[in-house]
Amino acid sequence: MAARNKIENALEQGKGILRLSPTWVPRVFCVPGRRIKLHPDDYYALGGERGGIDERWFSSTTPADNGPKTAPNEGLSFVVWEEGGKIERVLLRDAVAELKDDIVGARIWDKYQAWPVYSKFFDNQGALPHHIHQRDEDVASLGLRGKPEAYYFPPQVNNHGGDFPFTFFGLNPDVTREQVMDALKNFVKGDNKITNLSRCYRLEPGTGWDVPAGLLHAPGSLCTYEPQVASDVYAMFQSLVNDQIIEEGALWKDTPKDKVGSFDHLLHLIDWQLNVDPNLVANRFMRPKPVHDPEEMRGQGYEERWIVYKSAHFSAKELTVFPGASVTIEDGGAYGMILMQGHGTMGVWDIETPALIRYGQLTYDEFFVTEAAAKAGVTIANPSKSDPVVMLKHFGPGNPELAL
Ligand SMILES: [Zn+2]
Image (cartoon, rainbow, N blue to C red):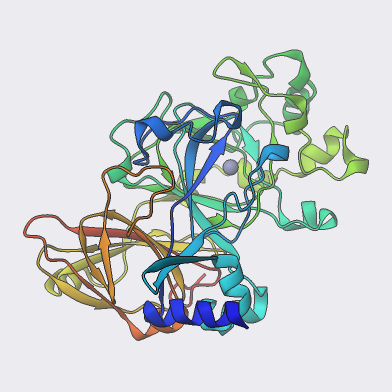
């Protein structure tokens, strides 16, 4: 009961908006792109053997899966607030478990009993191997969920494009199953050349892509804002990237035990029509779209755009509040928020965008807005004479504002 009271205090203090602390995640297999505002001395703050920090997770109730060395609570967001002059904290996951629909809204709580998505910055200096995220039906027997994801490349964190700002998606329309099967069988023989069967696209800051489960993709090196379903399932189909060999275990990750060794099983993970779609760009590329009439929005001092809008599993908006403006924005559901630029206030909170963050430091750039607060409308004021306030907001499944 004490825990419940505490979280209620946090909710009361923020008037329905929870302040979160930064959640940094290291990856052994990645080289940080150093674009996520972490202090240059802190990219290896967890020690060399844990790898560099190249991810920051937002509004996460999902633990990171980094093998046996994963730290307790790695990947999980904390709610922070002040009580008696002292900082209190509780996991967002526990806050949601206690206060349920008071945080995520009845529509989401009744169906998922959780906050079933999160978003992250993915900041990798190099390219990633061509891989696939399983669909629900592929991993249901393991008690896991499939993982659709989406990308948006915020200009504020893309001062450089990294080593390979191009992403491979899907397979060429004339590729046969036999060709893919050969590449999979060649996985342990060196370079299996699976990207020879695919096409890559130059990535453009300020745009994004929709990546349903079952679509092969080899993410490029732009710093990526990535809303996704709360799941970490994948299978790596490319054996060599950046002249580094991918170990065979990654090919069979999240494969049911009795299917390990079955290349047929791997082939079945591919949603074939989705991968060979000749209209892949038209169907999966996302240029931002205005949420309301652009003239009307500008007249009121802001501009809001859908940046992720092709998935039923999640969606995201970019809100810009012009210098000197104060606006009240209503949304149809709860959301996680990260501030990209500017400073001001959001509800009762001061908000600001740090230029540099030490590992372990608290910030005022990340919040979770409850459904009730989102529906009532959140007032954002920008006192600057020159700098816009820019924030990204990710929503859960079935956003009522998007007809999908
Ligand atoms: Zn992926």
